[in-house]
Length: 320
Ligand SMILES: [Zn+2]
Image (cartoon, rainbow, N blue to C red; front, side):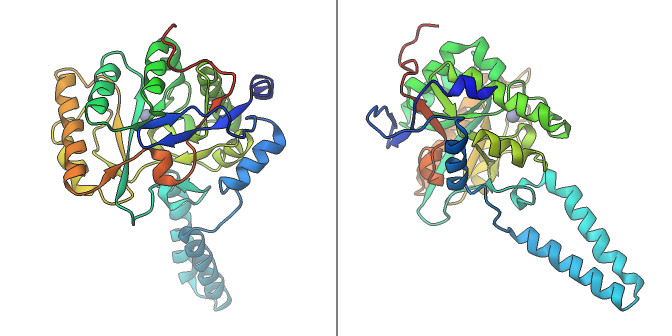
């Protein structure tokens, strides 16, 4: 079904400059969703199997269990139990990459970091956040919820017009999305893509709600020609319910290559938006004081986060 939507438009890989995107319509391009092109993008996105450390650990545990079985030792249940625990814990530990390749951070050498904002757009926070990012000449990636994009189209246009990137964070942000069937996963991610196509973009990066993955995600990503990006530096803000000390917690963990995550949503009752913005600004300043450069997510990880449609609407057009 998604083919009919994507086929008609030609897209161009988004080309970030030091401050935002350059809309270079002469770039060579490929349509999103055409099977052979999706295949080519999958090959470039690392959808082929490349073993992670957890796979070697799993094989080692299995071999140990087999050896103990041959020796007739009851101790074989220990590596088997460890293996079962590993598989059960893997969905909540995406960085282990048991089920599929996941981008967690950029190169540790090079002194660059990227800011990412989940769960927006939000009329109470997004406009002020965009002003703050402008003030510091910093660009970021926004992992958008499709329903919110539909409700606030002007905010999506403003995000794009100011040179930021947009990724897919599902259509409704169902917290137990990863426990659902493959069909529901596909529907949720595809619906968000369709919403964002109306703004002239197609995200290539998907961030799962609440950071949980599962084995059913791999074929869905492959079908849509997308890849997963999580983060390695969070302030444990519980969706902006815990804002006090947020900057300190992030600055304690940040290191070269870090993908930092915030939530672009109104803070919990009793917490002012300005307080949250103050924490974000402290992080921007703190990162700079450590000699780290804040760059676009695509620049940090070395692959495009979204595509621009050649015939799509102009992001600088602010009509709804
Ligand atoms: Zn989220």
